[in-house]
Image 1 (tube, rainbow, N blue to C red):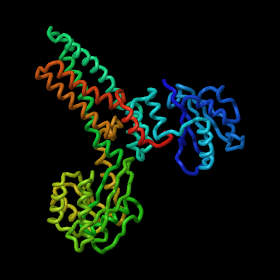
Image 2: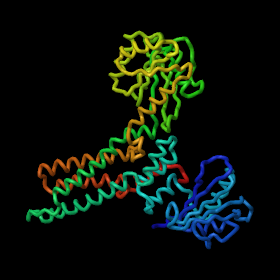
Image 3: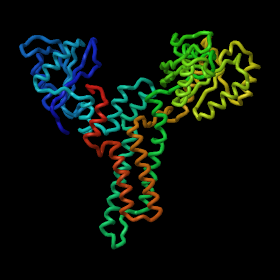
Length: 457
């Protein structure tokens, strides 16, 4: 455990509030704070204790009444000596305290520097450190659970165990190179094969979970498409329970893309209302229709909405064929169910030969659609069970690179490749596993990762 130079930053959100917390960490954090503090001698207080007093300027002018909490190394977030100063949330007070700390030799922290020190001091691995930022940014139940799973170890502990076993085998394979002329085999090939298969079995669910993880982290891009006057804007307003989009009987009212967010069962949906799909009557509407098609290409889920009272069977079949050809997951939604009878609904169901969700956007009868949207996402087992899910592109890249290297090593093993070629592929796998969890890492990569964190974390 290393105590680095003392750093300080505001740990709570910037802006005026009732309370603000300033965090100080590093060598001398307690004694430096004690020089500004009027109250108990902080240097004599045990860890995890809070003390009321005042902070003063160099000329002994009162800055604020504060509550100072002492955390002694290694029992702190950074495993260094840490002090947290709770003061009133005035921007002036915060700046006064930070100025006093810098006058005493404390440096202002860089983004993510507290978490970076926690990682460097072995508090957790790199995957867990990145989960701290994900936990702070979590804005849904699913993203919150995914971040917590990673923070508690997620998949990294399992991969570290497998990596260590692979290191032991690589050492034996490379030892064979020293006895190349004697034709000896230190690394039992069947045991090595079994270990590589075990690693791939651990990797594949994680690699496959990335698409679901991306949805959890960034939300489900859900595009509402259909002909003009199908009720797309009315549906968007009903889902959001507010007048977000202009509703009119005039076809082509929506000329541009309208976006907003909706949370259903803890999952974030990014709803996108689009211009009606038809032959445009003017240049502006044509741009809107083109943007609709672009949004469909980027969507994770398409909601095709049609007017159940007005659409012709051939029109509906043509629309379904077009959306099916795009390869995008979609929901087929019939609107204005209050204006048609069961026979008409059944007729259209038979035409497309698939389930149609019937709603009335105008009358707010949309509960079945909400259930269907949630069910589409929750069919992924990782989302349902809260098991480890990959939400970070960096993790995904290292996992796929590791799997590729292991696959090459297995193919080489089957082909009877020499130990030097086998060791080369295994070393690549070890490199990527090490960079994933932070066992092997460079300062540049660390700076890049933690620079994305908020200051004070």
